[in-house]
Length: 431
Image 1 (cartoon, rainbow, N blue to C red):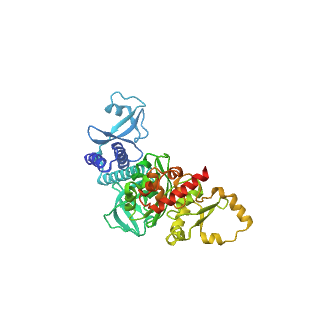
Image 2: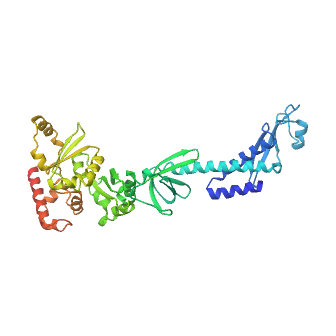
Image 3: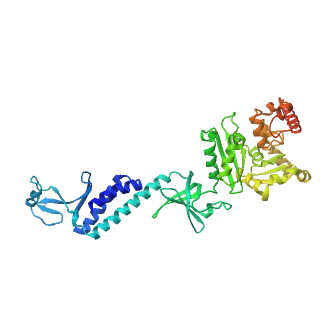
């Protein structure tokens, strides 16, 4: 049995990636229990791995005494000197046990204990490996399906993609490769339970982390992200470097970076908007691609009233209310949208007018801010195009020509003329 156990150390160590010392400890513990069962648990038995022999040696320890009262734990001086001529009273003498005396049942019990110890060690290794990776993206293979849940093979272990964390429009077959984030790692009696998610908002954040070097380097930060999985998502981005356009960085050359993320999410539409600490400015950005006429903020109610041109109402609200719903989520504010025709026709009491006027410092109208994105009619996409061409402020735009602007993608002569007119009016007002 000793040879088989020695081989087990090498084999299991390689197969399971478990440290040799853990296996040796498991073997020693297993053989000690088997020996106690064979010789009696009242004896003091210890086990030690002999590197040269490649086996576990078991020793029964007895105290040297003048008169033996307990044969399991004591040995007479005369008997002790047969094993150690220099033995004296009070010594603890280790007598080697013959492991060949173990029966088949003892060997089987030792094997079961070893296997259990190895499983425990393996579970601890897996928990140690994945316990600190919550929020990270992992790649695995679809192994099987259990009551709507998908079991993913990660290599060393399995993980679960629960039905509630799946994207409804996605479907998988056995053997498909799948990427997901680690939502949670639970330490349970049967082993670590690794829970994955493809529907969590952090999934999109981690995908952009991997695709955008500026995010990895800390220049661009994703301030917030919300999703309706499989349908549409919005992320708000901010640049710590004024020279770096956060939206452009995430979109990439000809949309290369954002397309990688969209493909991984199987066509989910992604709106990338500039983040602002001003709720009203952020609201205008978040409701992109709709054009906003005015935003009136009510900080007491944590709500805002958004006025849009009549022809922009359906775009601002979005299909089944999706655009405004996601904008409200990413802001964390309640949003009420009204068309200009309705806003002009409403009766407003003097008290309400005064209250809204006092809060107008937080309102966006077509004349607020110094960035090009604050101009009426300039959405996040156009702002990205203008900034990429070097027109980051109203002053930059006012000093441009129609010809300069017409060279840019998506800007015709009519739009260029309108932009210059608005920019010059703003500059004149500021002056």
